[in-house]
Length: 148
Image (tube, rainbow, N blue to C red; front, side, top):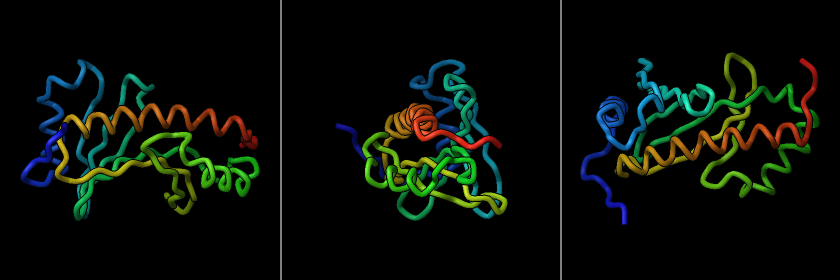
C-alpha cells in the first residue's frame, strides 16, 4: 500500500522530484513552474500530444487540471452538462468543471490528491488525467461541436 509522506508537497518540490525520478519515462513530460501569487507546475505530457496539465498545491490538496474546450463551442451545452453530471463515471478518478479563462467559460477536467501523497501517486494522477482528457474529447464529438 502507498504510504503518505511526512511533509506536504510544494510545487517546486514536486517538479524537482519528478525530474529526478526513475518513475518518469525518458521524454514523457517537460516541467516548468509558472510563477504567480501561488506557483503552478505546468507538465507538458509529450506522450499525449503535448497536452498541458496544470498542477497546484493549496491547503491540504494537490489539484491537477486540464483545460478542454470553450463551452460556447459545445453543441447543446445544457444537455451535455446534464450528461456530465449524470455520467460522471465515464472518466474515472477525474471531475468535470467549468472555469473562466480570459472571460470565457471553458470545460476543465481535474483530479485531486492529498498533499501528503507519494510521488508515484502524483505521477499516476498526471497520466490518468491525460488519458481521461483524451477520452473526454470523444464525449465532445458524441454531442457534436458547433462550427467556430
